[in-house]
Image 1: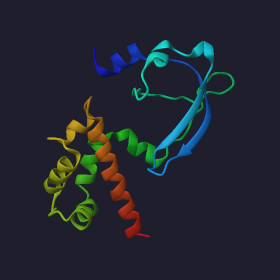
Image 2: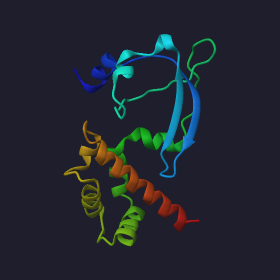
Image 3: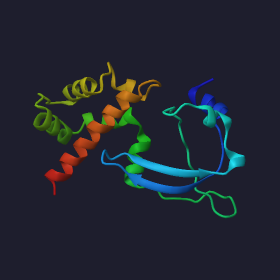
Image 4: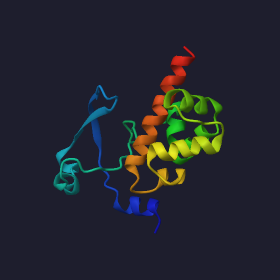
Length: 157
């Protein structure tokens, strides 16, 4: 059984209604949802605070059919996953310039950039970013990529 099959087998399905949305100073978002009493699953009720869950949300029409949304560029980038994102960035000379300027590293090619990413994320291979149990490494990648994008936007503003 692969990861996708295990995820489907262990999925908890229920309807929620968006009740609030707030962005924190850190940039993280707080999404508050309301779950009807009849839909609340005991696994969620019994889980200690801080328990992590993978979540998939599908907006539904009044007739229960999914609402179709066009993916934005940011969504397309996110859907690539951290491993592919890191591979793309490491082949980008602008990313190399960022690593030289902001991190003081000697980065002249893809191999140098890959080494910098592995070091910054605390992994032995960029492919580790896509593995189960590497959430902290993925967060470090996300922060690195967000910093790069902010630097790039500032440089080209």
